[in-house]
Image 1 (cartoon, one colour):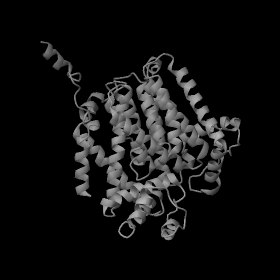
Image 2 (tube, one colour):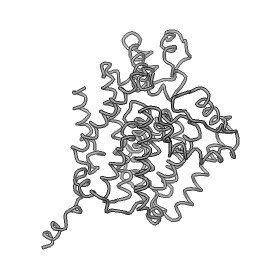
Image 3 (cartoon, one colour):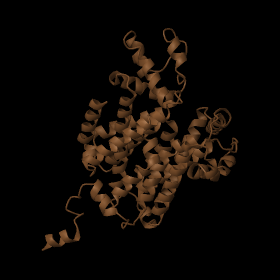
Length: 436
């Protein structure tokens, strides 16, 4: 663990993405250590429920890895190729033990864990190290994606928002969220580099690869991110009437996607309904709440939008608290809501009107919030699923905020960030001395 921590810490500081981010080296290392602690805590908290996903991915990855000495071709098949049917010759036992065999998105994380097992020596903590390395890269990429397009003096405060307790905990667990934030960070940052003509063929390759992997891990994130990304790219240099343009193009792209799926024999409404009923009827947890069952028509889904927004943005309610875990979700909800409220005091319509980046964040986050609220009837699951939407809502509210005189801003900036080139962060006395 110590050896790998040193190696990955050095790699973080060597990466151009992080080296050019204005984050101080000791801040990067502190954030890395903080995420590792949160990731280990995530694993420890889920240890009593040893069948929890985080441990399942790790254990199933080890099952695949153990094929390597005696059946290397089968190991390569299970890591890189499509899976055979359950009970296939030579794989009867392992295919029956891995419950995610028929779930491509869940099994994808098992593939990744099987690769990490090549050098982890079977230590869960080493897998956590790799996960935090990747997720921190994604967070810094998104931090730069927003701050370089909306230059402000409050970047340090924005960084604090991205590491609030709930964000830190859920994006550090050895689960899909940490890997998805890495992929989304790579997508947004490399797309920005290509649009601003700062990228190269390497940026294009990373963009395509990250899009492909995101579709494997969480298809619904890909489906919501892709049209928002297209709108952002189309209007990157055309910033007049952005809201109407985004609304029209985004709606049109979603309509095209739904129509294409219909012609391919895929009923999206039915998929949503089946998914919701699976959660409501078959998955029972301590933090379930009553939910209206969706019907296969657009009117039913439209009527459910207010309830979906309420469930994702406001739950858990005080009366929902039945354990310390739900209490943590309650605190996370209200810390986030208070942060949104503070940022709203500095909201600027003119700032929003000229920012395709802010509109991109909004048009990705809000549909994601609604989708989660449509399908999930469990507060614990909602708190985890919504974390990526919250990430982009923070980016939206921060990007449309014009206040600069927050309490402690100058101290926070000096603590977290390097001085801007040209001495922009010099004190008034320093500037007067330089002028003299």
